[in-house]
Image (cartoon, rainbow, N blue to C red; front, side):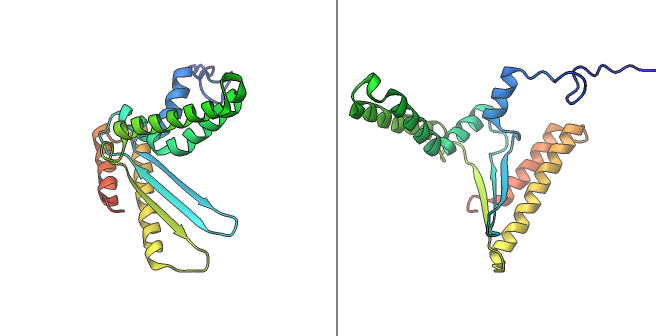
Length: 185
């Protein structure tokens, strides 16, 4: 009879250990190598779906920079606001703090654009908005395509995790989804 050590199995025995590097990697890289998707339904029944795909074969650094570039406008503004609130009168005159925050915001944004902007990392995305009780045929077709792509990518992830496909086959499925989105989606 085989004995199983339940101490390091998540959800069994003691809590699973989470390394600091794994948490930061998950925050910076996301849960999927190919990108991310989101589907929400608003209060009035409006359904919004989004799919973002990184180019297959791009490095972890390129994906991280692309994520930073895409999130910089809002994240940078929030960081600048927090810096202005914390530093306010303490570090210098408020107008000086504002000037430094604006220069830092624009400089970091420009650096991210040059390192990971649309010319360097060709991220492809698809957005779908479905209004309740309005059958917009074009949006319904986009939604069907969105569902098919998300299903294909999630299935490839599961199969890779189970070992039924190789990393090369996983990347081939990723390429097919990336090509189906096309540069003009």
